[in-house]
Structures are given as C-alpha cells and as structure tokens.
Amino acid sequence: MSDPIPELVAGVRNPATLSVCKDHVDAVYFSIDRFSLRARARDITLDNLDMFVEQVQDSGLKAYLAVNTVIYPEDLPAVEAVVKAAASTGVDAVIAWDPAVISKAVECGLELHISTQANVSNWQAAEFYRKLGASRVILSRELTLEQIKDIRQHTDMELEVFVHGAMCQAISGRCYLSAYLLGRPGNCGECAQPCRWQWTLHGEDGGQVELGGKYLLSARDLCMIKHVPELVDAGLDAFKIEGRLRNPGYMATVSRCYRDALDACRDGSYDQGKAQQWKEQMASVYNRGFSTGFYFGVPGPDGMAVEKDMNASTMHRQAVGVVQNYFRKQGVAAVRLLERGLAVGDSIVIEGTSTYLEQEVESLMIGEDPVQEARKGQEVGIKVASRVRKNDRVFRVERHVI
Picture 1 (cartoon, rainbow, N blue to C red):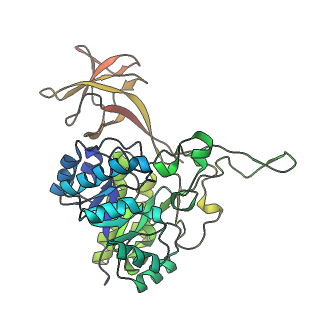
Picture 2 (cartoon, one colour):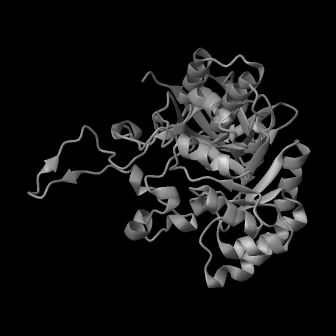
Picture 3 (cartoon, rainbow, N blue to C red):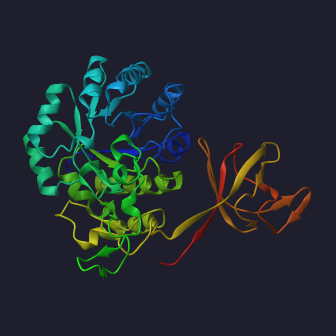
C-alpha cells in the first residue's frame, strides 16, 4: 500500500490502560480531573500529570492531553494553570476547541489539535484553525468518506478520524438531553447517557408505537475494521480509538486488532477474512453492536441498537470484591468478597489504577484451609500471577452465546 500508515491513537484513563495498549498504538490521548468530556476519568490529576506523561513517553508513545469542555468565565484561571502544566510536563499536543484554550496553548508554545467538538466538516474550517496555530484537526464524526477525501484534497493539515468506539446520537457532542433531564451537561463531561435508557414512543392518540425494541435513542458503536484500507487510501494522518472510560481489557483487544489491521495493510496481507476475525474478537468485549457510522451515508435503522441494552458483547463482568492486601513472597491476594462468591476455575479480572490482570482462579484459601468455593462476605486468599494492589477491584468474567 503506497499511502503512509496513519498514527494509531487510543484513549486511556490511567497507567493500567496505558500498560495494555502501549505495544499496539503510537500515541494516547487522556485528560485530567477537569475540563474533560469524560469527567469520570479522574485518575490523572495536575499532581501526577508529569509522572504520567513521562510514563507515556518512556513507552515510546506521544502524549495528547484533552482539554475539550465548554469553558466558562470562572474556569479561566484554572484553564491557564492546566495549559501551563501541560507545557511544563512536555505533552506532545493539547486537544481543544474552545478559543480560550486554543489561545493559551499557542501562547505556551504547545502543539494544538482541534477536538471533534469543533465539528470541523470542511477544508476551509480546517484552514481556519491552521491560522490559529493548529497542526491537526480531528474531523467531525458525521462526515462521509467522500467528504473526508474532499477535505484531504484541499488541505495538507493533519487529519484525524475516529475509527472505533461509542457514537453520540447528536452532532459531535452537541447534546443537551442529559442537561435537560438531569442537570448533568454532556458538554461539560457529565453526560448521564439517557440515550442509552429504555424509552417508549407514543402516538398523538396516546397509543404506544411498537418499534421492535426499547432503546430508541441508542446508537451502535462505530467499527471500521473492515474498511481500514479505504481509510488509509484516503490519506489520513491518524486513526482514533474512543474509550477513555472503557476497561483495560477492552482497550487491549481493540488496539491490538487495529494495530494488526494497519500492519496487514503495510505488508499487503490485509483481507476480509482477517477483518472478520478481528471484528469477532472486538465483539467479545464491551460494545453496543457495530455500525460504520456516517462513513457511507446517514445511518438508518441499522445504526441504532434498539433491541439491546448497554452491553451486547459475549463477555460480561460481574463485580466480586476488593483486594485487601497483597503478599508478594507468596504471590497471594487477600480479597473481600463484597458482591458475590468465587469458585476454583472461575475466570477473573483484577483491575485498578495501575493494575490489570486476567487469570483463572487456581486455588482459594480461607485462613489456612483450601476450599473449592467461597461465599459473599468472606475473605479469601487467591494465588495471583502478578502484583496487585490494595483496593483493586475483582470481577468474575462470564462468556455468553449471543
């Protein structure tokens, strides 16, 4: 394939997520505990930003900091502090769209990427942001592939597009449903996702309209794994994987599949058989069903997940308990079973800010006695394959046939 292979960028929320995707991606984007469209991603703060950026760059990756919420007058002093901190820690770029953040980032000499929140949908808009100091625009998710090709023909700005992850039912985040219903504004990172709730549709006569499902506003996840060569041929500079709130297992699988697809494009081995296998692998982790979004036209009913709830994957995680202690010499974690019991042979995930571990339960101990199973409320010792940490969460993993 003659076109250069785009940079692969993944969303991460903490060192654990970074650790599972660092061998697959070229860059990561993340946010701190403020001015982020993922307000619940709070593991990275001003206090540990420098340490995290260093960890990213020591892994051979670029570090992109998202500062992409609406900025109000009272936010300006804190925004200045965040941007100055970004400059001092040496982040590779700031992702922004509010002019206050843009001007401060340029003033601090930072590379600037324009967030998809700006809804850049034509080449003149891209050139406008170039004049403001931007080097890259993250294009609107509502563009077709043909429209993207037109933008590419008219500008040599770096162009980044989303290739996988959640889709908003409104235009590039311009949704006010959560703010209206719950007072939690999506444009400030606090979306409660009411579009993922069950809804009913009533006609003017008061009768309920049957639509074959209850999740009437829930868009399927974007998945472009079967069209990677077409996107490469479009001359794009970066592919983005959405998922700063997804668990590390999700990001490990998705980033690996897109890395494999890009590598296959590079060496000429990409084919639809491989693409189908990658898609099936990604269907095993959290998803709402897949669609190609707007790339090939305005989505129809196939773009909505009206019949499924939040998770259509074959893998389901059930909260089990919390790590109370880790005994390094014995390689054992003491776990309090707060939500449910465990048995030998169960598949588990242990996850925390700096921890991600998948394994089977090979043995259980209560006190000094080996047991085959333990009940909710008990504390058990579990032999673990690597280090875990106090307060890490333990999940039991079950696979279902869909």
